Structure formats: C-alpha cells, structure tokens
Length: 156
Image 1: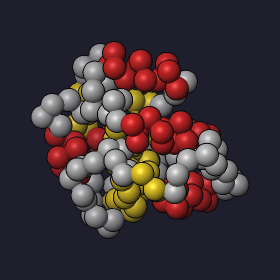
Image 2: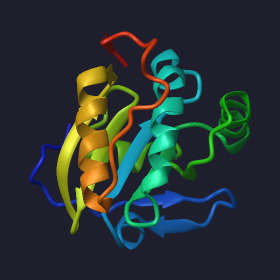
Image 3: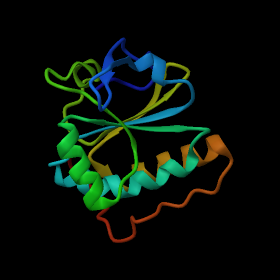
C-alpha cells in the first residue's frame, strides 16, 4: 500500500454516469479517500461510522471509491443510509492498483497532493485517530459516532 509521505499517483475514477475524472482534480482540500466493496462485511461495518465524517465538509472532503457497480453501491447506501460523494474504480482497478490497495476498506488522507495517513480494514484506534485529524482540520470536536458497539479490530 502506498506509504504516508508519497505524492498521489496520477490516476482516474469514473462518476455515476461513467465520466472519467482525474483524481488530482478532486483533491481541492484535505480529502479522505475510502476504497470499498459493497459486499465486504468489514466495509459494511465501518462505512456507517465513516459516513458521519461528512460533517467535516466542506472544509475537508470525504470521497468514497466503490470497486463495484453503481447498482450494488446504491443498494448498500440505501440499506445503511449512506450519503458519500462517490466515484467508481472499475476493473482493472487502476486507482486501487496505483495506491497498492490489497484489502478493503482502505483509507487514505490526502493533503496538498500528498498521502499523509493510510489505513485498511477496521481498527477502532485508527478510526479515532483519523476522526481527530479531520476534526482538527476544521476546528470541530471529534465524535466517533456509531462505533461503541464495534470491535477494536476487524481485518478487511
């Protein structure tokens, strides 16, 4: 997986309509990129927590990247009442490969075109850490919502 301190690779994602977007063009502010697959149980567990991080927008951006179809992603969003800004990394998964994603969910905090934090799977300590970083960016009090009942660790 890409390490903290590296520049963001030059890669593209597609939107719901299939239009390509350079990832660099989506990084106009500190951005947390969450790569996930709707069928992944660890993703299903963590995404409702991560969805609450949208409260840091517009100062920070929470950008979900689905490795599945629009229909599968919409079904997951409907089931868990998620509202992420979402793009798609379609096979052969150019963005995921460029970032070295080997497990989902994978999370990348990107600031000024540089990866400043990475994580994968579910780790409550990592979620608390990134929540604090996001809150600090926007001068808000962190509040890890929907995580009290979750395990401290669950691999992706």
